[in-house]
Amino acid sequence: MKRGFNFSPGPGTLPLEVLEQAAEEMLDWCGTGMGVMEMSHRGKAFMSILNQAQDDLRELLMVPDNYKILFMQGGAVAENAIIPMNLLGYCAETPPIADYIVTGFWSDKSQKEARRYCNVNIAASSEGRHFTHLPRQEEWKLSQDPAYIHICTNETIHGVEYFWEPDLPGVGLPEVPLVADVSSHILSRPMDVSKFGVMYGGAQKNIGPSGMTFVIVREDLLDRALPICPSVFTWKTVAENNSMYNTPPTYAIYIAGLVFEWLKRNGGLKAMEKQNVAKAQLLYGYLDSSNFYCTFVEKDCRSRMNVPFFLHDDALNDKFFAGAESYGLLQLNGHSSVGGVRASIYNAMPLAGVQALVDYLRDFERIHG
Ligand SMILES: *Cc1c(COP(=O)(O)O)cnc(C)c1O
Image (cartoon, rainbow, N blue to C red):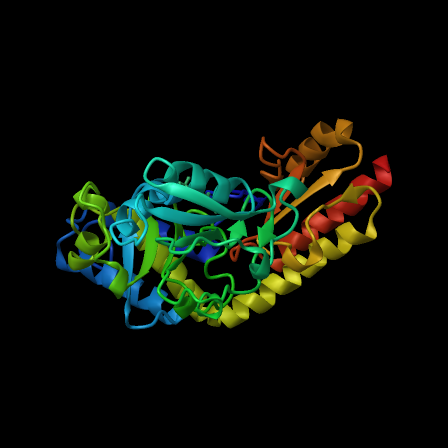
């Protein structure tokens, strides 16, 4: 067996230890005589897996007690509809209005879906500058009374990350929840959950396999759903049933739980942040020193998780990707809407993987530059 370094944006690479443990437990989980995929979700064994995963996520991210952790399905894209259906039942404006900050492909997709349910105010957008910076909060043109304000704190495709948390009480909107798509950088560093009303995302970037969506929601927001919201997507119903209103994605939850334990064993989110800073510095540092490759995102909001970059001569792209693959540097192609190269360097990517990539970049530049 030969595993490469996998730079996929998602589903992304997982820690080797986690995969090995899952392989070992595949046929018989902890002496139960059955694998996790074959267990009733309502049995004692799976309930212990679910509760432990929730507890570990709460501990890692220091989720306050007045927040519920939900494991759902449908991915972050389904949440784009589930969010308005859960929050528009409480809005002073008729028809209701929600504010969106558009900073890349994913927040744009979110606001487009929300338009099916409410008026959308684009309070700020960086599209005019090709999503290479983040509008400062002072530039946001918020509505008087929006049902919520939505941001994407790490734009997986454009490589833009918030390193600051918006301050809504500071702009006179203390009652308005801030909703954040944190799919692709959750658990990459500590975050102040209390600044958000809702944090959500798909697991398949920095947590586990696809199929599981996490929603971290403040309890007082559970009474705002529209009557049309399907029961299975109503956060309150999901919360009251401890994410078991219907069959949850059991195997994905189990793997996520193994990843949470791996994070705890490895020093938690402070240690992850340190390692992620080192990885990002190594890669951006090399790109900045080179005239052969270029990046466009402004330095103060460059994502530590997703690093898009370009060869000046994009006629060399095919050669670049083929060479990378032959060295075991996998899935480096940029998103079709952006082109170029994208290295996703999630928690499970070791520093050695980024070093191997930088070595390859240097060699390729020496030969073709
Ligand atoms: C991947 C991704 C999505 C889409 O997630 P799905 O699970 O495919 O629905 C949404 N937002 C962000 C920030 C992402 O990285």
